[in-house]
Image (cartoon, rainbow, N blue to C red; front, side, top):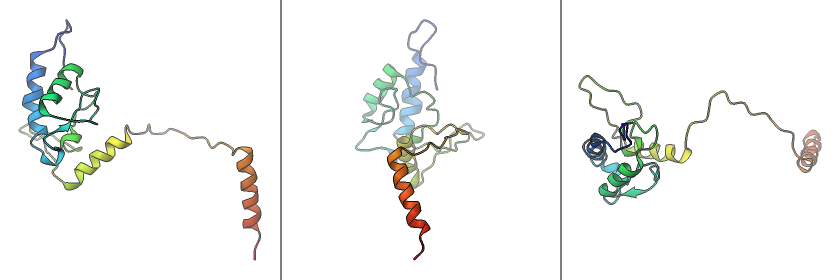
Length: 142
């Protein structure tokens, strides 16, 4: 997302400023993603699972950094099909369902790798006996 440390391993002032000016200001303007004055913390330790205050989210991001690849802030109201317009501002989804979509995406985790093959395994001996009994039942006609 943003570069957090300089070449010597020190925290960049620009990173700290952008947390407040860009991320937190954006996150706290979307009431559908705020619960009791708190938002999901996108630091590497919380992984958008804990709700924290603005101050605590800021501290966590400074200490731990953002979740790797969290460039579209879907858990904070940013549209998943974001497009930068001519002015450079982001389009934000205010749909009622976007909150639920984000929740489902959090629960499902990363998308499966496409073209992954699953080989069917033969059933264990007990299951095979059961399947054989079912075959007998289904093959008989009343």
